[in-house]
Amino acid sequence: MNLIGHFVDGKRVGGTSSRWGDVFDPATGLRTGAVELASAADVAVAVQAAERAARTWRNASLARRTAVLFAFRELVNSRRDQLAEVITAEHGKVLADAAGEVQRGLEVIEYACGIPSALRGGFSENVSTEVDSYSLRQPLGVVAVISPFNFPVMVPLWFVPVAVAAGNAVVLKPSEKDPSAALLLAEWFAEAGLPDGVLNVVNGDAEAVDALLDHPAVRAVSFVGSTPVARHVYQRGTATGKRVQALGGAKNHMVVLPDADLDLAADAAVNAGFGSAGERCMAISALVAVEPVADELVARIAQRMAGLRTGDGRRGCDMGPLVTAAHAAKVRSYVAAGVRAGAVPVVDGRDVEPDGDPDGFWLGPTLFDHVTPEMSIYTDEIFGPVLSVLRVGSYDEAVELVNASPYGNGTAIFTNDGGAARRFQHEVEVGMVGINVPIPVPMAYYSFGGWKSSLFGDLHAHGADGVAFFTRGKVVTSRWLDPRHGGVNLGFPTQT
Image 1 (cartoon, rainbow, N blue to C red):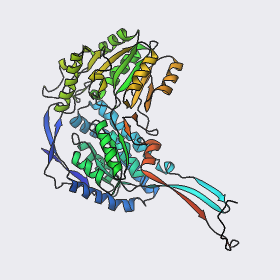
Image 2 (image 1 turned 45 degrees about the horizontal axis):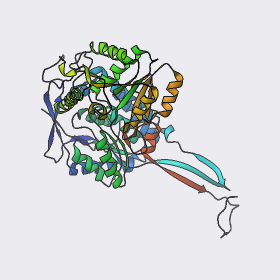
Image 3 (image 1 turned 135 degrees about the vertical axis):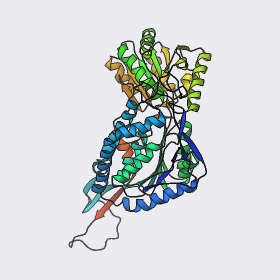
Image 4 (image 1 turned 90 degrees about the horizontal axis):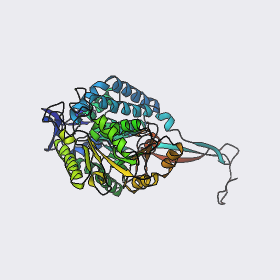
């Protein structure tokens, strides 16, 4: 049995907690490890290590910080296959999908390697006579990152490289469902030359989260997870004076207009609906078909689904299992609720015959037609391989449906009409928009985040927003007197 502890002050350590969580191989249902669930005292030890490290790391030159980031990038790049295997073993997503996750994380590391440019301030000479003003951005100190199970590598890498490059020390709390990848990243950062204590990993559950939110030395918190927990993190964190960015849940729509290329749209719906078993905050879960294309589009999607192979992610399958037995049961309950509510199950994933161990946490791709807005399969974030088709009569009705959702993470439109696409990107109330792109995840030099109940806080992840989040601004007004200047003047200072 693999016993999984923490990484504090440059090494793997055990904690004081007597509580443990189970880690499973989702494709077999076997318990493969036990992860220690940190107590508040364990969290305090990690924060203390980060505090010590932050005092010196904040003064490290930009050249030194970027050298560490470049070395870390090379380690992750050369070991990406190892990292993908760890993701698949604990999360269940297929190896190709896990490799893609690593690649997207690498892109943020590469962005962080350019931190000297991102931290450049402004300078204005002679704002008043012989007075100059300039701006600085400085690190916050100790920051916390709380990441979800669905992307055990990519989401930590959305935040940690930028935070570290900006001069902060980090305490990372990964999901207790798949904790091993985060520990590998911490070890590789240390191997790349990151000083002890600059990155610490504490494994745990809600107790560890609340301990981070309450600790006075933690200056900022980055979180990704469900909307109810994101709201809790934001409210509790800001109540103690912390800066918080809490990315919540989603119900992402894909609008298909009558002039769209239906083959392209069908491919996109399958890829975006069932990749990573639908356990993506950017997954397409609601397809809005503007009539008269629904019948043909549903048929094309079902045809493609018939060729999908669900099974062990290490066997070259298209879709893997869900992350835990409890989560698989929850998603199955939504499928049953959809049937009871009157939605038409075109493809019922409960009938899947997986290419894998029968004790794995299986549910095949599921397609519902004739879904209506009051059904739970539409209103709730299911976080599984369930795609719901809603039929509307016009573009305006489609936009109204999207904007009525309490979520505002991402959405996509499929059309060959440039005017309609331009109007859509302007009118739709979401943070990320795809035009003939089903999963509009921005590149690392742009920022990731939604609107409404999909984001609590003002700044998004990575890109310019990420740098702004992990730093604070300072403006200096400076005057250096030369020998010609002197004398006393008690008048009110004025610009001359």
